[in-house]
Length: 524
Image: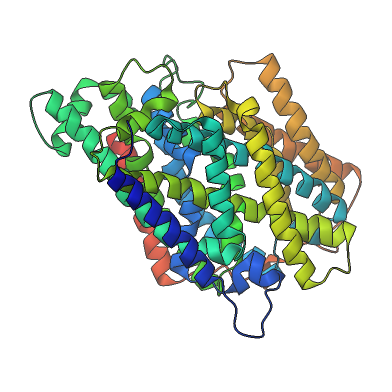
């Protein structure tokens, strides 16, 4: 498959327009120099639509489009639980966690940990997040993105890596979060239009192969021919049970992973921290929750269709690029732009978060405590470029040998998420939790997860996350009680925080829950 001159022209126009719009929205008024709040938090002026769109654009990248489609090919609709359960998680975070963060006026997650615990917790977790974002998340997005570009255009993997890195830096580095967030509405529209087009054509091809026509007919054929691909709750006898262990996707460790990703992850929460107000942030979160309900149509369904159309693929992660081959020339440029949009927005968001944490939690606190606002912005831009360069260099050695990259990423990050969630939840809701107990939880999470991984390799990682989370909570409580500590002077007083939400937010939340009840009832 190759791009026609029309496709190339369409894609080139997209690239030029995106960079131009990003630089235009990033401009400052005459006489005003961009400061750290402008650069890292978009001047705390983001509207709800930008927040909602940016949350999804940051989340949906090659990791989801390529990786989750690959899991849809291998497992089926069950992998959509990551998307659908995230919708509920977002609403919980908007109502109960976000008010605490905005009340504290923080810029980064490590900053909150220092306010609640001490500087040691801030530093340890800042270093951890920098390493995770650079060597796992950023590399995964780059590698899977370059694989997709290679499959569609034949471009060598290294050139794909370099193109994605340069393009993402080009449109995000000048304006920071504002450039990323305000252009993400374009990225999301492209993502949805292009993704739905691929899904439609894949289903239509299934129908055509059966002598019929239409996407709805193709979907009906899938339901009849591969009903096992629609199982949301896998039976223990299923070969993929270790990846999606039955009822645990509803009541187990998946909640811990979702809370960590959507609630305590700088890469995601930075958008809500940049909101005009709490109410605006909550409206953006509700918007994002409904977009999450839609995402399986874009990131899972093509993989499921590929299981019928191309059952002999060498690797599951080839599923989405194969389905893109169904797009006719002339429209392929749009769907290719949609894929690159998803990748680029995630890369831009990731490097902005890396630069934010390094600048605000490492550089300004430990290296140059007297840094000017201008210096912080310069350091942030430099770190963004450096992180991208490192990710380009290490992407292939780290991820080149994994057939289902999405599952690898979830499994690896599952070593750390139990400790992260326990630290934040105890910090929120237990006034006696100490800095020592937080550090114990962070270290225990990695050690216990690694032991469980090596000693019980057949134990599903989602269940492992849930068990290790409970052990981290228990260890934190024991350490605190043995120290005989009382209420901490920096404890959070929840009676000072307003958790009430608007009527519209409550109605929208109810709608999400009802939709999910129907979905899981139909495809239990």
